[in-house]
Amino acid sequence: MPRRKTPAGNRSRLDAYRGKRDFGRTPEPATDSAGGDGRAFVIQEHHARSHHFDLRLEMDGVLASWAVPKGVPEQVGDKRLAVRVEDHPLDYRSFEGEIPKGNYGAGTVAIWDEGEWAPADKDWRRQLAKGKLKFQLRGSRLDGTWVLARMAEEPNWLLRRIEGSAAADESAAGTRETAAFVVPQLARTVASVPGGHQWRHELKYDGYRLIAVRRHGETRL
Image (cartoon, rainbow, N blue to C red):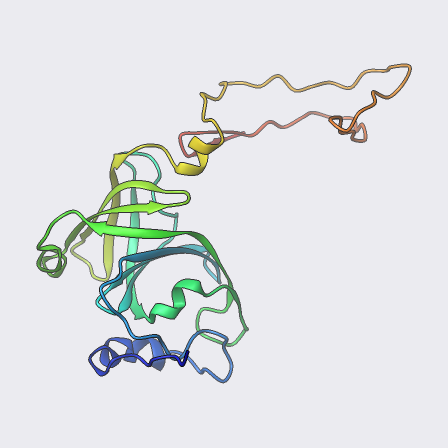
């Protein structure tokens, strides 16, 4: 089935995107399928000069996009800086790969989560124009409600999680409270090595063991 090009009404919204890229040197999508009333979202992890995550929401035939340096907040009440960037074509929601050096955004792009989003208010377009958007995400990892609020200094926005359960991937894994301290396993001398595929073995090195514990989105050593 032939690909339909971006409707003329959306071309101006993609001018900034196209103006920053040489499509003879980057594998990023140059053309786009025609948009409709879809509500897809994607979060892409971008290992560029500055590591960040890109939140993209399908709106009126394009992907409205925000760069989130520390990632989309997963705990209710957490806030993250989100920088509004140029709209991207819809085909970008499936893009993964390496943007070569010398190109805008050079680095590796990988999909971190994807699914559907829904605005919380019927007049969400007017609310967005005024600088606020409340929305739900239903993805493989994330499931809940967030709000984007424009800050005084554009293009900076604040992304805050306000409702919802823990990340879906943690729930699927059987989330339980992590111990405050984990006693490291110490090597000892035995007569023979245990059998069975459930065992894993490692070399013994002298020194101290470092334990990393991640709780509520924070990592402690």
